[in-house]
Image (cartoon, rainbow, N blue to C red; front, side, top):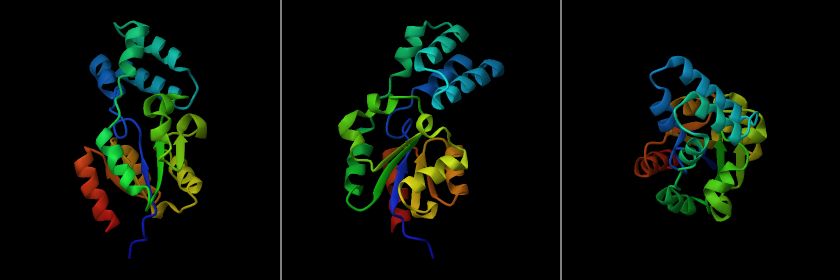
Length: 191
């Protein structure tokens, strides 16, 4: 018998907001394995708070044909997933809600705004926690912050490897493709 779900945990990029980094990274570096690895390493360093977003943009600009300003502008093209937020508001009265995201300092507040952030009970950010998905500690830390066991949580992310990390610690997982399919999959888990 499954343990009842008490919390739903959302990734930010590619779920709560449209992902800008992965398409940009792939456009610039998909054909060069060494540069792709460097770009991913720079993103990891940004997510853990080891470099600033300005330094990150400078590194990516140096590696590409884009200016630092162009990198910064394209990295910040992350509109909110309004349909998902409408659905999240319907979940608020029944479930604890959280964000678990690999992200640099202050980025979530810029993207979501104060009002959208208020719907979440816990916000776990890699730069604050000092650990990034798919490290098991990221998932167990967010569950602890929710005062729950991992098996009482559902985690959704657009990156399958991050969902696999959540499942490995006992969470239920949903790979996010779009709001409609997420809603169907979540409601099956919650039934």
